[in-house]
Image 1 (spheres, rainbow, N blue to C red):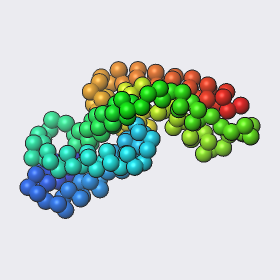
Image 2 (cartoon, helix red, strand yellow):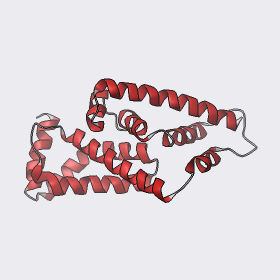
Image 3 (cartoon, helix red, strand yellow):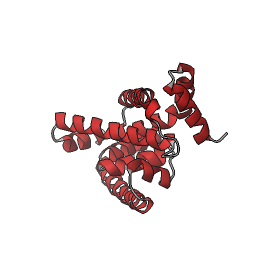
Image 4 (cartoon, rainbow, N blue to C red):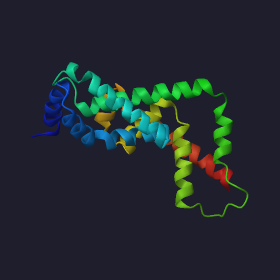
Length: 187
């Protein structure tokens, strides 16, 4: 049985209130949804909250699922992206002028050695990704964190494959520029 067929069978069971089927479906998809949320939010606790909300919505809307319309993974990614974007908008509305603070948070102490450690590089990459425009961040998170193909990322973002490829190119360029700037600050 293919994954999509197995998902649809489990969804039918979930629509009937089958909790073990829900646990099975959650186990199949939770790690990719969590990777996507972490990639977009950068915060593990907030990402876990988003994942819980995604699967609550799956439980609530299983009866409305229309087989053949979209793959469940695409729907899960789309819901995750939307919830993450909504969360980021709420955070942005609550905090002002985060750009200067984010740059200050990425600045290293005066005793920085010439060679940046792997952990420090990872922190810099996360800081640079966090500063990308929302749609670029979503594309990066889908492609790199959730392991979605370009076509899957396009479907989750409701864009064409060409537009998604262009979005990823712009995101990579922005990341190179941001990381170069951050590394100059570090030196």
